Length: 388
Ligand SMILES: Cc1ncc(COP(=O)(O)O)c(C=O)c1O
Image (cartoon, rainbow, N blue to C red; front, side, top):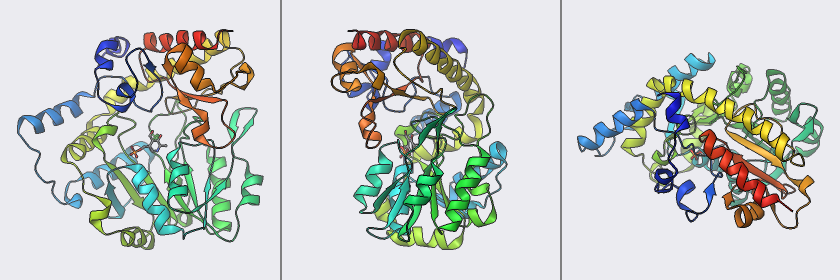
């Protein structure tokens, strides 16, 4: 895929999409919210989907274990992150968020604590709330180099009834990609308090500046044994509508507890198109991602420059990964939420910070996975939203 294809997105075609991003608001609103990219599909994925449709190949899928996806995931983790894992320890799910809910049900009892590092992708909070687990909030703090884990608060917050750490790395919405030193410090807390880690690593490929992404399960054998890793090609390869994800269990006991929690049919079946596309993405999608990632990184740099030049009252620490920017708009001293100003005055939809945890009402999350021209249009609309 040529760079020009990333640059040359047609707003009319995008507006005709039926996806959540493009179909929730009327066409006069420019969407820059839900985490979906606007770029053309990777050719190997398009090809496999086209072949299935042309061949009317939409019958029942074969048993998940026979699809090859588990082995493909294992090969991908080994290739990208040097993580050798056992494909037999992998379950195929329809979504990462589903994995989070089932894992919370399996590894914490009602009223027992689950640590969540806020601000956070909102389903983390709804998962804890809707399963009746207790939120142990560990709010990230802003240090010299951006958002960081507050280890003192973490130690203070974890009590004898805290069972799990619901961990997100790369972190949505801060864009942090945690360093080995941070992960190891976190691992010490996990071991000291006998926690199970539910690690959402869906953004693992979306890492900038040649930073290293380290799967939590690779830290040590002890950590592996207590870590459930959730992943999916849906974020990196932009196929979230096809609903396919994986969960890896670091040990037999975790695997059995997860599988024992709900009968198979409650978890739901898988769609063949998601399976075919996920295999194609992980096996053949990397050349596409190799084009997309530098484009995202350049958009990130452009965004940070533009924010500094045009919106000096907005604070944003350059994301190290993901294609999301977390904007502190408190300096604008607005009456009403920044998201509402953007929507009503600027006609641009950004994610409202209040959904990412208590105390983040003056924040916005901006999705920059689009063409440079559309990103600039979004910034122009934000300028209108925030003009006095
Ligand atoms: C951190 C994180 N986890 C999970 C998801 C959603 O994954 P799924 O659609 O597989 O539930 C997203 C989507 O933006 C995300 O950012």
